Length: 164
Length: 353
Ligand SMILES: [Zn+2]
Ligand SMILES: [Zn+2]
View 1 (tube, rainbow over the protein chains, first blue to last red):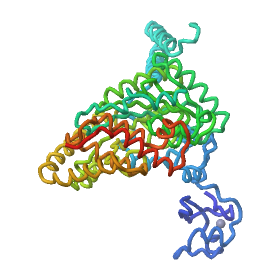
View 2: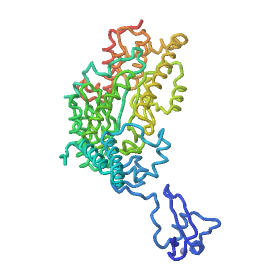
View 3: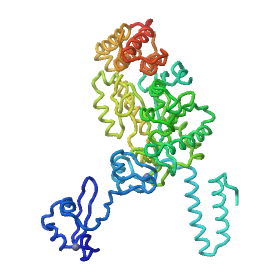
View 4: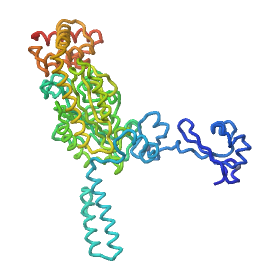
C-alpha cells in the first residue's frame, strides 16, 4: 500500500497504538517517518506523531469508531452505557464483544431454546439445498417432492399468508 | 384500584411458606426477549417505545388471555403504587422511573409479571414459593412459546436471544432462589459458603436484588452465565446449588442449637423484645429484627406466629405497603412510628416459650 502521508512511496513502516481504547494505525514510508522526526529505532508515541507533528492527508478511521448501521450506536456509546442499541449491534460490534462474551459466559454458542419459526426456517434451508442438488442431477421427481415439502413448511411458518 | 387490592391479599405466594424450615423462600425465573428490527428500549426514541408497548400489550393480552392479566403503565402509577409493586417483586427500580411505553402485565396470582420496555422489550418473570425452579420455568416457557408465535423475537443461531446487555444474551434466562440463612450467619459460616458459590459461577445478592447487601439474613443466589448452556442445565445447576446451601444451613442450625443456643436465644429474645415494644422502627431495623423473630418461629421458641405471618409483617413494614394500608403518604419519621405501631399490634398475642 501507499504511504498515508505522502501518498507516493510504498509504505514500509507500520505504527499501531491504543489511544483511549481505540487502536490508531498508520502506514508510512521510511522517508516520511524520518522527515516527521519519527525515529523508527526509538519510536515516540504514535499520538505525539499524529497530533504533535500535524499529519497531512486523511488517516483512515480506526476500527474503534464503528457505528451500528441499524441504530446509530457508536463504540463509545457502548463503552459509556454498557448496553447495546439494537439486535444488529451484535453483528456490528462482533469483534469487540467476543472477548467480553468469552469472559462472562460458560460458552460462546447458544445451546438453549430456539423459536419454532427459526426451527422451520432452518428446515426450509436444508430442503432448499437438497432441492437444488436434485435439480442439478435432473432428478425432477425428487425435486417436485422437495418443493412440496418446502411449500408446506412455508405455509406452516406464515399461517396468515394465502396458499399459492 | 388494583394496587389497593394487592396490599390486602392474604393468599399471595409472598406470604406462603412452602418450605417448612423456612430456608428456601422463593424461586424466580426471568427471561429477556426483544423484538427483531427495533432498537432496545434504552436507545429507542419515545414514539418507538410506545409502538412496542402497544404491540407487546396486544400480543400479551392474547397469550395470557387465560390468566386475565392486569396492565399497568408507569405514567399512570403514583410513587406509593410503584413502591408497592417493587416490594412485591413485580417491577424493578429501573422500570419505575421510566415514562410512556413502559409498564407491566401481572397475573392475578402474581406468579407471572411481564415488564415491557424495561432494559429489554420484554422481561418475563415467574415466581413461586419454595424451591420450584422447574415448575416456574415450565409456566414461563409456555407463555414465551405462545408469545413467539405473535411477536418476532430478535434471535441469532449463534448467540441465541439478543439482549440489550451482553450479560443476558443466549437463553436470556436468569434463575434465582431466595434463601433465609440465619443459621450460617449466627455460626459465622456465611463467608466461606458465599466464596464457594462464587467459584461455582453462582452470583449472590441481597434481598432487594442487584447491588444490595444481604439484610434480614436473606440472600438471593442466581446463575451468572446465560450463553453456552441450555435452560435445563442452568436450572438443574442452580437447583443443586440451592439444595446444597440449604443443607449447610440446616446443619448450621442444628449445631447452633447444640453449641450456641444462648446466642440464638439471645438473638430471638432481643428481636421479640424490641419488635413487641418499640415505638419507632426504621425499615432496615425492622427487617433485621423480623429475621430474628422468624428464626424463633423456626426453632419453635416463638408461640402464636407462623413463618407466613412473619413474611406478611415483613412485607407490610416496607414503606410502600405501610403507606398504602394507612391510606396516605407519610414522611419517613411518621412511617417509622406507623411501622412500630403496626408490628406491636400484630405481635400483641405472640409469646416466647
Ligand atoms: Zn511517505
Ligand atoms: Zn445497533
